[in-house]
Length: 315
Image 1 (cartoon, rainbow, N blue to C red):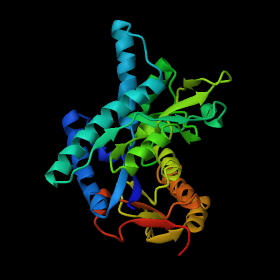
Image 2: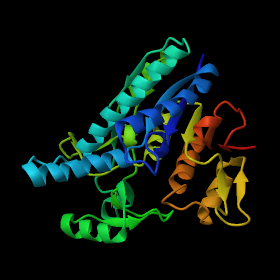
Image 3: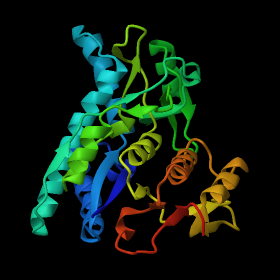
Image 4: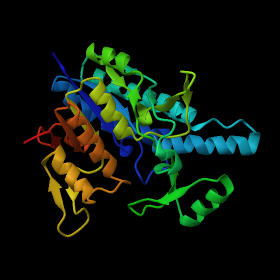
């Protein structure tokens, strides 16, 4: 029986920090990332691909504002913007994966599932927005946008500028998990839980309602991996390994660490919440809930069985 891996694509998979975000740039980046997933397919993995949407959903929100200000087109709520980004990004990944599979003469179907993820309406995150979306701004630009649109901005941990932040509630349940598992178990490549999934909550009337938020894609991906019984969880980012004492003279790369060791590093402040922190917590969650291992690495290294930082239950 084939193994299943959930692969969470990093933000640079679609859009690099120095790019303006043309469709040509995004498609090139998508291809260059997805071609490395062939290594997992050749290792006999069935794969589910998840992805972020920070820059894209931020741009959709800006188009919302521009459309309203110029033409009085009604603004769409954030959950609709997330669903919008799932469709567009999923289409790009799906088409590039089909092209790559054909190049390698591999016969597989690829499908995108617009995914809803249940959250708690009373999650404290709604009172403390932390999730960055959209473009980077100078402080003066961010201050102006905050005043005009009642947005909240925070400075990027890597000092690349200021970004709008929105609530990021914890995912409780991936509502499409059964159909995703059914599809991947049959050998299909499934693109799911884009941007962390469309956040919804269950009302007192037992109906689902969308909510203005963006769920962290790594948390949601770890939950999806757990719920479909995946053996491996890959978090692809722009560094080859996870480091402690990062950007310090005595920085140290981590090779294989247990979930408890990773938790200890996190508790000691090694992984900021605005960068590596959520990835580490997602990695720990997966391993502590039945997963074999989480691998954090660059996509170009997937052909190396010893690539990246591997978080396991025990050594």
